[in-house]
Image 1 (cartoon, chains in turn cyan, green):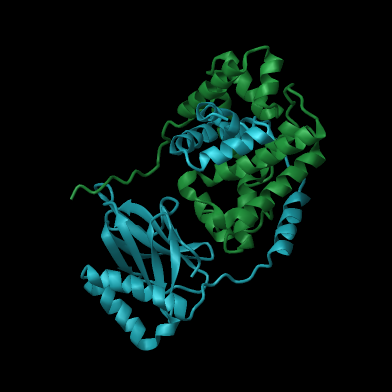
Image 2: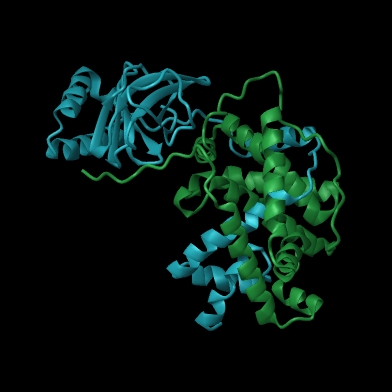
Length: 218
Length: 199
């Protein structure tokens, strides 16, 4: 199919209105067409709105249980912890090295303190919503490291939270920057996550919005 | 869902819940169902017009979410778009296989959806918002996108059914979706905008 013709398939693809052959051709095209990817993001958002306009209907109450049981049967719920031994330590050291390269005194102190105690207990988990990670020491002390964080709006601050079992505990306020290192004021229980919201300057006791940045469970 | 149990993840964004589900967290997976199960089922039933097929479509789509959560890329679009796209695709696959396509609107099956009062209220608000936006589209555009999306027709079948050239159908679908997105994309109150640092 000529490229020009494929470009014109974006709306139909977003509506699932292509036959199989057209759909495959479009997907192949999409892999190397930035313009269509951008266009598809917009049109797919329009198409999915139609899902919300469908008449209200109540799913049978047992459907939820059936779906959860099928999911568990496929992939048993193993506690998802990152490997705690060498590969992670190596990654943490790499992060530390790049942080040290830009002269981050606080980060070095925190990291060395943890490394001295027990470096194999040190591990990092990914964060979502910004580039960075949470580094967790063996005793549950955590450090949030973020890169290229825009300054918060005037009169606002970033606030970190340790979220565990549905409760959010304030864990420190901070500003943006090229590399941001936050020593969390709360210990991180196993399975907790770290979240970041934007709050009024000085911070608040409870988050006022959904976190814009969240970590994987530690 | 069990109404007596607080939803521990209720404060997290959809994208964060998908990230948890990617780590085999079945509580996070259940949270996704609690957020989108009703919309998913309503959509599947609208397309398939058969309760048992609609259940199959929802189940298969949610299992695809469970399997694919680790590969979800938030930069490419919202988690809700991803989930409901999977549901729609599955429903359309089934309707084409079963050859059950119809274009007539379906009466509301039941009021009083499952879920918390806030969820139900939000869904109703969202439905009214989208329906109001749809009413603002020119009829030919609205007809093209509704027939394609709810009817499960391919663009060629649509052209035939509407007695229009394929090119006309394509441009109506494009214009309709683009306009719908524009009408619905007006920023809602309360969202944070992080401004780039000027220092």
